[in-house]
Length: 109
Image 1 (cartoon, rainbow, N blue to C red):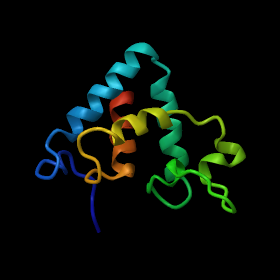
Image 2 (image 1 turned 180 degrees about the vertical axis):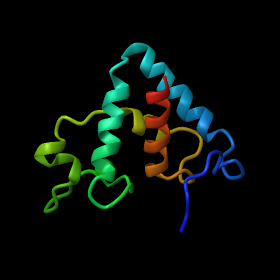
Image 3 (image 1 turned 60 degrees about the vertical axis):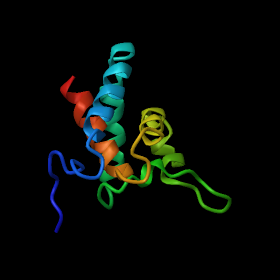
């Protein structure tokens, strides 16, 4: 089984952790409550079937996404994750890892 590892993306996206931390830090300076928002988002993602970033998936016609379920309507932090995904490592760093890194960094701030 895979285990969480600091600097996991050292080879494939060396700036990944720095990018996540810098975006989180900028947002945190504007809104300190984002730490709690990201922690709650991470909890809701991981609670049922593990941390797979399913809480970030949009609804489609005929399928209501997890993030649109009534208990999740007040989750926030989606915007931060979107900003991170559109940065330099598109397609390399998983959404679940970005959410985990962002939550870790927000809590540490």
